[in-house]
Image (cartoon, rainbow, N blue to C red; front, side, top):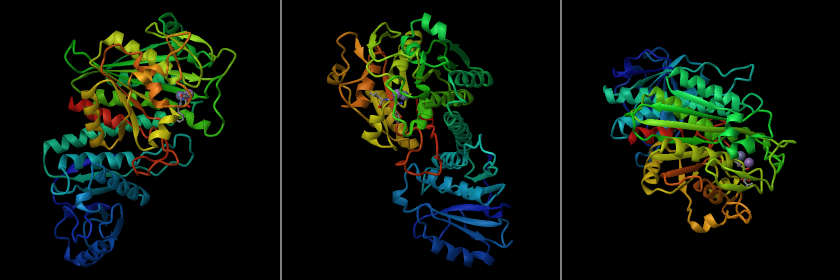
Length: 492
Ligand code: BES
Ligand code: MN
Ligand code: ZN
């Protein structure tokens, strides 16, 4: 989908569908004055019928009485109830309507500043429309019809035009994440992901290197090696470096769990919904999508993306409960459940990231625990951190992007829950208590001194039965975290 920006009078636009927002119980289309008198009565009546009800769409045929073939009214509810998500949400519905009508293009009038900040509106419209038209149909004979192009009507301003360009790149980052995260496990192995990493690096001149099985073993990545050893699809660690900041500036390091399929290993998972464990690579895919956008946006900061990737399989070569392994930082872990694999590969990657890059901040993403879904459900990610400032910044970006987070505590009592009798740590806590926190406790042990924030995205990384339906999150991977972190990186 292409996005064009115009600042002329939308009423004069020749378009297949001219769309505008309507506030609850108002008699106007926001940003559109004086509609052609030949159809104004019918428009007035339609506005009354629409009532400005949040998300309600009304299509009005104009029978060639205006340059626009159709007018679409989109209710956005009460002015006081408008959030950072309202315009994104309703824009998504509009774009899907345009696709349903098989249009080649449509036009949308941004709401005036008394309703919503115009720069935010421009971004939210772009994101809402672009993301809602994504569909994962790589493996279907019948593809979704072509995405219609969008013309947005906004006040003339370089800031707004730039915000739209930025949002296009951000949305393409999310779409990239969704499109690789949705891939089935027989079509996406650690090697496949490493090739994706190389190809985005090549396109935008990032540095990229991939560490393969033998070298991982030699260099002491004991967690990645152990988890990966049960599969014939060999483990990989991929690293992308965006050097947009001053030379010598400490980078932001982003780490993402990419288990291309999690059977649980020897501690095999039950069969029900095991297919969903193809989404256990979502954290890594989020990091790749962020890096792609960071480089395309040429953000003036140094950012490093690190993705440890394995397939967790049971086999004659697989690691076992009872094994004691040595992680990258030299600490040992007693394996009590081979299904608690994410923390092992992440601990290696976090320790490596801290040692190699002395970062100012480390942030990780992982579909780490089923317990996270029990605690917070499927619309809010858990965060755990050792740094107040970082937490505050992430919370602010969370509000702006409506990628919701909730903090869980991590004090020393939780750290005690992963103490082992025979090694430095156990890879699971005691019973099922505080499963999300004990997993985070394991990660914390991999970090020496850097401000760190962990996202458990087990509930939000893909749409599940309890997921709130949003047009910009069609079924499958959501790309959670891409928009949030790109907002954070633009604000620091
Ligand atoms: N990838 C899973 C976590 C998961 C499960 C995410 C379901 C989303 C939906 C992770 O590797 C895992 O299996 N965790 C175990 C940990 C347990 C053995 C301590 C879990 O949550 O059951
Ligand atoms: Mn697991
Ligand atoms: Zn897993």
